[in-house]
Amino acid sequence: MPIELIEELILWIRGERVILDRDLAALYHVSTKALNQAVKRNINRFPQDFRFQLSKDEKRELVTNCDRFSSLKHSSSPPYAFTEHGALMAANVLSSDRASQMSVYVIRAFVRLRQIIAGNQELSSKLHQMETRLDNHEEHIASLLNALDLLLLEPESASKGKIGFISEAD
Image (cartoon, rainbow, N blue to C red; front, top):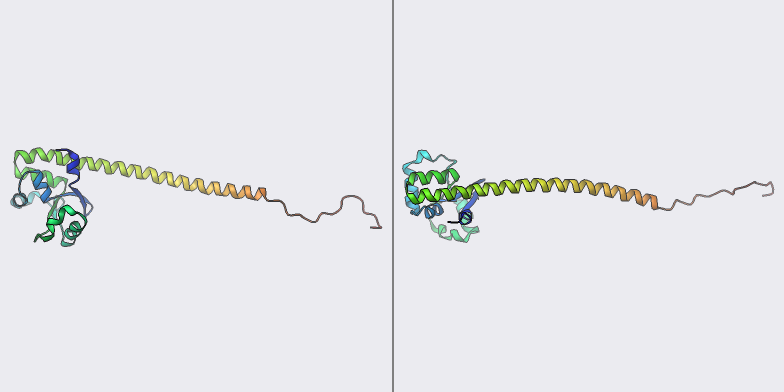
């Protein structure tokens, strides 16, 4: 399976990159119910940073913003979200060949997204530095233009006295 397809299943929830239980179950070729039952049998392997259940508000927002989750609208309980480590642990507790094979692709998708985000942060930092430099350049150019304007202004005509000798008759 192409990693790009798995990347599309990865969501950003509570500041974490996660994959929902239904998508993970589909990748591992088990039912969502079977996945969640295997997790419950091995709950000590799934601390809060490996798996968490979405709140009703998070579920509602997900259904509202993503058409592919419309079937969740009428489900009685919110789905579970698995982090990168949780997805790998889920493959381990399922102990099927398919889950083991697919977990490699799932982890690669998480790693690739992490690299893309890191690259974007570096690019963002460089853009910010350039903006700062441009702002400084704009200030310097504006002050140069003001100085040029002052130099180009005609001097005010001051009353000039006559040059030469002043005679008493004048």
